Length: 425
Image (cartoon, rainbow, N blue to C red; front, side, top):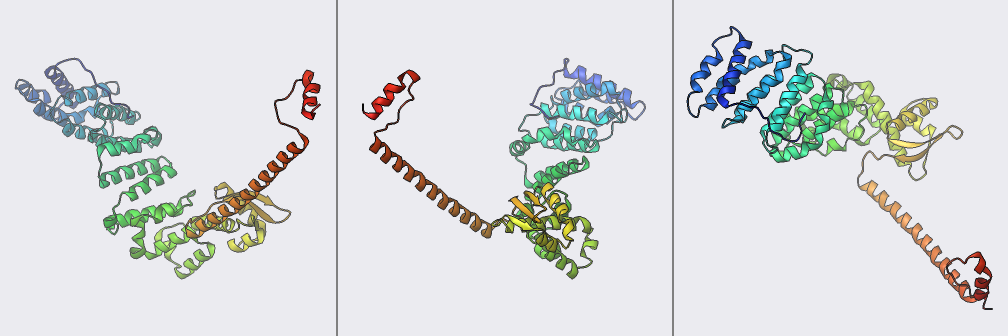
């Protein structure tokens, strides 16, 4: 996998190694067309012909995917070493990345590992600020996706932002990279990471392109992923995006549904379904998944609105969720597991005691509530400080009246003397 850049060292002159590789490729190709060695031999006798030699070798190097497993990495390392000695190595490396993204025929089982080893070598021999690393990384992701092995790239992603900055990627290339990462994570079952990368891709869409058809397609895909994601409950990361806001005009029903999940309750969701009874079926969204998620979000809203009393009667929850009161505790437990609220069930009083709740929308109203609570705490602290000040004054007055002074503790042997001194004897 990608690591700090390093140098590939192989002994021998360019001419010797190029001819050796040509012979090796011919042996792999057997009777397939003209011999590479015969083509490169006369070129090796000419000055400044390295690029022409490498064109021949790189074209024929697709045969290296047929190399025996024990020779595969060594053969590719030799090819990379030769490419580095040309005037424009990036021109050849891009073709090599294409070959390595294809199946390794001689080793179906270990093929992905072999390809990743070579691609990692290519990545690491390039300068850290070389934007060719971007294309190598895409090839790496293609191989990792075929192996469903997102864990192989995951530790390296802490460097992703610095890579993007050093390669000076434009918005289109950034989007392509984030989408590739999203696909790799999704195929490996990493749904949270897949969604995070996808939202990062949506953020690269400029405002002036948010109405394009491609942007609309990506926006709808991201919206559907957010709605159906089993553990995603905060939709403000989507509603703030220009491409999502553009759906307000192009796809108003989708945008209305998103707004319901962002801040409304089950009542508004049921009203939406009654007014658009065939929308969910035609959109391909799972109605059961959405209904369950809206119930969890509804409980979160109820808990947030009950912050002052810190209690939520079972009857209120049952009415809001349209369920029997005996099912309330099951739903509260699910909401707690989802991380939306924290609290304690009181079966005796048939209430939910709220310790913490999550605001689904944090706007002006919520800021006003925070300001109100801060004022309350400030008033309470002023009262505490006044009590402390008054007690301090009382203590000073008592010391002055009795003659007692505060000082270091006396030892037992000095107890009588210290006490006598304090009393003025």
